[in-house]
Image 1 (cartoon, one colour):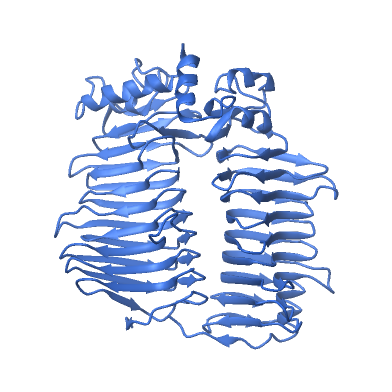
Image 2 (image 1 turned 90 degrees about the vertical axis):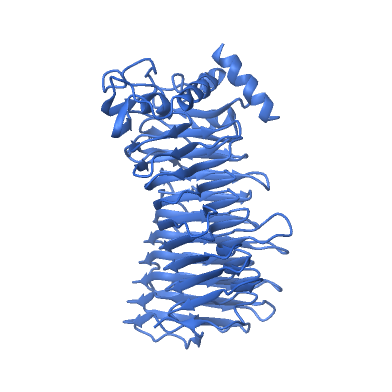
Length: 313
Length: 313
C-alpha cells in the first residue's frame, strides 16, 4: 500500500500546476478513500497527493479519519488539515521529503495537525517557494532536517515539535540580498544531532516561547540550540525571545564568516547548563553582534561570553 | 500482494524480522491475534503491548478510538500516539503503567495518554530506565506512587502534562560518569504528598511554564527539591516561569558535604503561599539559590533563604 502511494505521489509530481477540471474548494481524504474518487465528502480520496490535484487553488484538504496519507508536493495555495481527534501521518522514505512546498510566489500554504515521521527520507517539510507557509500543530521525528526553508517567502511555525533530526529548523535561501523570514512560536527542538534552529545569511528569524534542548553532535562538530551564521557578505538576524536553550553544547551561537554581519538578539530567555558555552560569538570574517536587553539568564554553562554584549534598551 | 510489498520494504531497512509494520493501530474493538496481520488499520490490535511487538524500530502505534490499552514495556524506538479527542488509558493496580527500557540510541515518544492507578500498590506511571531520549506530551498521570521517574543518564522532555495524587510527581536521578537531563514545559503537578519535582544525584534539569501546588501534609512536603548525598554528584535545576505555590515548602535545597552541591536557579518565577519559601537544609555541602532578581518571593509564612545574585544577560 505504501509503495502504491509513492507511485501516486510521483504521478502527482509530473502534473505540477494542473488542477482537475472537476476540482472542488473542499476536498477530503480518508483511510477508506480511493484516489480515483472526486475527493468530495462522500467520495474521499486516499492520499494527500491524490486530493491535491482535485482541489481548487485556495482550497482546503481535510483528513476525515486516522491514517497515513503519503508524501506530497504542494504547488498551489492550499490548506491541509487534520482536525483534533484525527491522526494524519506522512512517512517519508526513498530519500525524499515528507512534504515539499513548491508553490507560486503569491501562494499561501497551511499545514495543520499532521504527524511526520522519517523512515529513510530527507526533510519533514521542505519549503522551496511560495509567499507564506504556515505550519501549525505538527510533530516531526527523525529527519535530516525537520523543517527546511530555502524560499524567499515567509515561514510561520506555531506549536511545532521536532525531535531527533539533524536540524530542527533551517532557514537559508543562499541568495545574497534575498530575505528568508521565519517566525516561530512554541517550537520545541529536542535532541537535535546538530542544531535546533539554524539561521543562515539572508535570513531573519524570530523564535519565541520555545525550547531548544539536548542538541549534541555525535562527532567533533558542535551541537547548538540556535545559531545565526553568515557564510557570505550578507546580513542575518536571529531573535531569541522568551526561550530556553538548555543542555546543548552551545546554547546560542553567532558566527560571522564570508564578510557577513549576523546579529543575535537575546531577550527574556534562559541559556543555562549548556556543556560548552551559553552564548558564543565567533568572527572568522565579518562582524558578529550579540545584543540583549539584559533580561535573560545565562548561568551554569562552562563558558558564557567573554565578548562585548551590546545593550538594546 | 500488499503485505508482501510491505514485508520486503521492511526487511530492507531493518534487521528486526518479526516487527514488520512501520505504523500499527489499536482500537477498542481490536484483537491481539491481529498481530498476525501487523495490527493494521483495518485489523487493529487491542493492546499497546501486542501492537508494539509488530512495530518496526522508529515506527508508530496509533490509537483509533477511546479505550484502555494496558500497561506496556517499551524496548525500542517508537512513538505511541493518541490524537486529541481520544482517551487512551492505561489503568493499573500494581506495577508501572509504562516502562521504557530501550537501547542507547532509541528515541521514544508518548503522546495523548491517560495513566491512572486504582490502588496505592502501583508504583510509577512512566518509568524511564534506559534509551537516548523520551518525549512525553499531552499526558495525564494520576494516583501513582510517583508519576514519572527518570533513571540513568538519559534525556527526558515532558510537555503539556498533568500529574496529580500520590507520593511524588516527578523524580530524576542519574548515575556516576554521566547525568540525567530533563526539561518539563507546561507541566502541572499538584496534590502530591511528599515532593512535586525531585532532582537527585547526577541531574541537570529545567522546568518552564509550569506549576507545582499543594504539596505536603502540613508538616512536610516540597514543591521543588534538589537534593544530593553522593560524592562527585550534583543536583541542578533551573525553574523559569514556575509557580511554586501552596505547599509546605516551595524550594528545598540539600547537599551533603562530599557532594558537588545542589543548585536551584529561579527565573521569572513565583514562590508564594507556602509555609516556607526557599529552604536550604544545611547538610554541609554547597546549597545555592541563584537569580537575576526577577522573581516573586512573597506570602510565605517563613522567609526564604538568601539568594546569590547572577548578573543578567
